[in-house]
Amino acid sequence: MPGDRKPLISGNWKMNINHLEAIQVVQKLAYLLSSDDYVAVDVSVHPPFTDLRSVQTTIEGEKRCEVALGAQNCHWEDKGAFTGEVSPAFLAKLNCALVIVGHSERRELFGETDETVNKKVKAVFAHAMTPIMCCGETLEEREAGQTDAKVLGQVKAGLAGLKAEQVASMVIAYEPIWAIGTGKTATAEDAQAVCGAIRATVAEQFDADTAAAVRIQYGGSVKSSNAAELMGQPDIDGALVGGASLDPDEFAKLVQYRLHGG
Image (cartoon, rainbow, N blue to C red; front, side):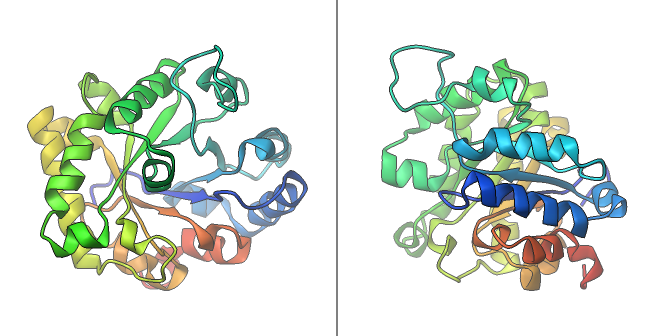
């Protein structure tokens, strides 16, 4: 991994942890992580919307905590008659630094399309936040040899209309759907193959410098026990972590993967 692509480890809490529990989780994480960890790795947590203000004030109140605050989703409009949705402008006011966009659970369960994902990516950028744009294939698609077609199609559609400098600053997360929450993990070689193909696609769509700069995370049953091997791959620049991020002890060990064989 080139030295100028600093790894990003992101904890996606999904629909877990209420705002009171969230304060305790962040305080524990702040205690477990050191300044050396933040020098080596960027860290973000992505709580449910109802937790964001509590987590923001906790992070800002902990002098030694350099964890970035992120959100799990947003709408593409700033305001309007969109009951139940959350504006990217609201997230920016909470000092959110990153927003997950197009997670497979949003695509599979809530019908998000490549077009809406692209709109959300642009909306996140419009409010000076960084999108973590997700892509990934189902087990059926993988077994049918359609991994590249599905994943790279999502990448091309999600990046449509963006400027090269925007793409260079964002994060793309490869999350094979069959590995999310199942305990199954793509081998480091398989994950690298797809992440490498994503980087090559960015180079084709934009240029080599943009491809060299964009950070590509792997997600899908990432744990402290397999993080070092995954992070050792040349085109994997971090991890989007689900279940393991709910336990601050386990998440801290994952952030510290470099101390455990990596």
